[in-house]
Length: 481
Image (cartoon, rainbow, N blue to C red; front, side, top):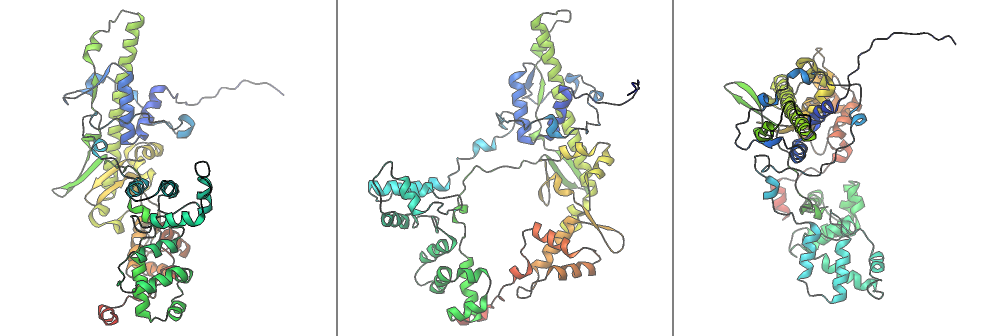
């Protein structure tokens, strides 16, 4: 093999720690950014909170815009550079100059907390109290019992002699009388039956509903209404009343009790209309207000190369870069949000059906950045609009060609489908093919399988599953009673 020398020219962007930091700050959500700020405050003595709001961070940072390139590196995936950054401390809004919503929120009561409290005021023997505790501990978040009575009995062996299954079942019946109604059931039929038995004895259609859920629930699930009417000896209007009563019950009783702390989606951007013009601004409460500690900055001596002085210089340089990175994050977020609003004015004015097709490349080209940068800055960032709170990524969607050569966004098509299905005749629901035909009549070319994909993405059952009995009128309902 002949050896040769070749000269190649190539561009390579070095991923310095500072540039990595700038990229990572773009990706962080508001809460993660606050945690990052708190870590920086704890580790860098040159940084401090600007509590009086009079900081001029831009001038104090003394970092030019050229220090952070507009074109962030795209030749590496995010995961290739960073592992998932652990969040050890989430700085409260109070620490960052705002209101601490989480601190103001009382501790949420879990389902098991509620059941244990109710059990504590019950009149139970010591053995039954141990059994009740084991039962409650085996209840999942939906409210269902996850262990068999035999397994619960085995779990009691280390503390008690063998307990009869009949005794465990008797305690289970006591637990099933607790709130929320339907708790500690072993399956859906038992859950519904418990709720029905706890209704007043004179509740209309209760007995028929109880027979249905205990003996014929699979038939109801298959929507074989003709068989149910024959088996129960009911007409169509009566069966409709029985089904309506069953539908009023909760198939997941545990879901009515909060089991975890609520998660707050804090808007990063506010959008409002003033004098006919849409205005976009950053949420000031989410912007960390930082400045350089002037006292420590004055301690730095230019000609001193001692370890202490070099440490101060290093902290100062890092603090300036950190402040600049945060400013850059805010500027990029504002540019991106403004461009999104400019392109989605129709949605803000008229709703989902007016959503325009838009992809990351459209925004990237408009503001002169790479798609990866737009992807990072729109991840877990939220925009508050007169129509509600939306993640920035919500505004991006693929498109479908219309008959006249224009484009319709997938979001708008899903909105049209949802509207068509909501207004359909419940006894003759629209099939995917019929939905496709209706869309074609409106000028939207779309395949039947695409209709099915959009429908499934919205968790809407097929036409067969949506088929239901025609709701009875008020007159017929009064006559039945």
